[in-house]
Image (cartoon, rainbow, N blue to C red):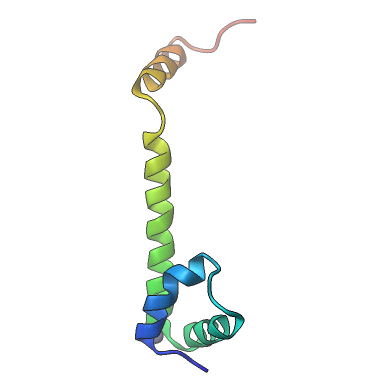
Length: 80
Ligand SMILES: [Zn+2]
């Protein structure tokens, strides 16, 4: 059974987490195959999640570590 656009939007998180039943996955995928608007929506959601992950990862680097790394890089490569 093909789901509606509203149902797809409500199911995006479950689909990303693999929490949809096999039947719901079929409806989700069938809808995406036919609906360019929902494909664009899901693509934007994927890009947003990726960007948020990148920002979070970047913020996990402590400021003193960043400063020490930049200081070491500014001195050039150490000689063996
Ligand atoms: Zn749709």
